[in-house]
Image (cartoon, rainbow, N blue to C red; front, top):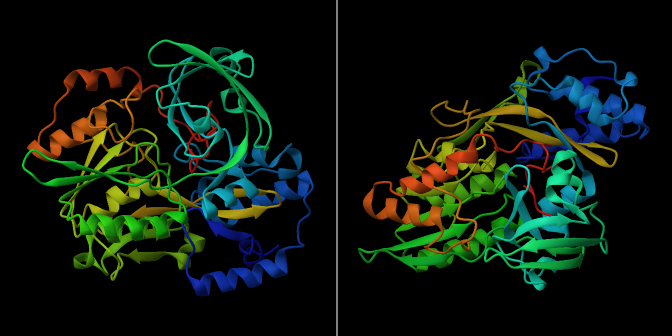
Length: 444
């Protein structure tokens, strides 16, 4: 099987497409190659091996593996992965992944949960409007004590916390025992349903001490519906003549490059249109696919000189690209915790009912900077105030951001120390104990 035919397995990009000409070429190759493999385990294993041999960024260090001797596509990927530095390549369910990235739809109970401290401090950090959890009154800060009859500690100790909620099936019952921040305990039985994740809820306008206006904008995911939301949001923010933008990406694990480019262009404005936002570099055999994306012109924008980003160890990929890609042009300050550290990207290759996302390219900004595998550091450290609503000026990270915007200095040393107790030992892992997909980041 030639490399050209294998490239035809490319269906969608984790960070975006490569342009019309490239896609047309890949579409024709896919039509010729679609019957080359069966969907038996052996056929899927071979697809994973060949795609990795063709597109993997670290192909020169990749070990030699016979896919016929391994039991699953995941086993093949595990055997081929060069870790370190690659802790990012993964397989995902094709239907659910495409439904989420293209339409923002997810099957579940409608919460985003994080293991704050091992083995059992498992918190709800976001609840999605219109979901079963929202209708039942669940809220940010709730602590999950039991899931489907087992304690969180039991699920964690078995290494199965990511499986505790069960498969993505509409109508599946999920039983929970939950503790409120005030110590009260309640029980719920929720049926999983299809719900929408709003990638960018309505911003909050906050008046500063000097009379200026700061906009707080929660941004959850770089998915396609975000682009329509941006047009409405940035039109409103421009009409409000906001002076500062605080962009909250603390749980945003990334997504599509086109969405990141759109957002960055709206923040920086036409002054920087045409400048390099990101350059993508592939392996030597695929170096002819290297390309550069530039900041766009003609979008409704804010023309800011500074961006303040709220981040945590779950701020990854396209979220980090916003920070790194804009820094050559405007000041970008990070409040919260050091980011995840994913300066590389993937394409989605169809493998029957799965999508394979091999690490396929590195990402550099206009100053050729991009090797932040240890994450991007903070300007001011702050705790994630889980027991306060997102967007509340009392929430620790937003309070720190507002203080920095108004004074240019950091405060809240005690909250910094509280965060450091667990931030280093509980940084998330792709397919780690919580089983999160980097795009959905623990949405259940």
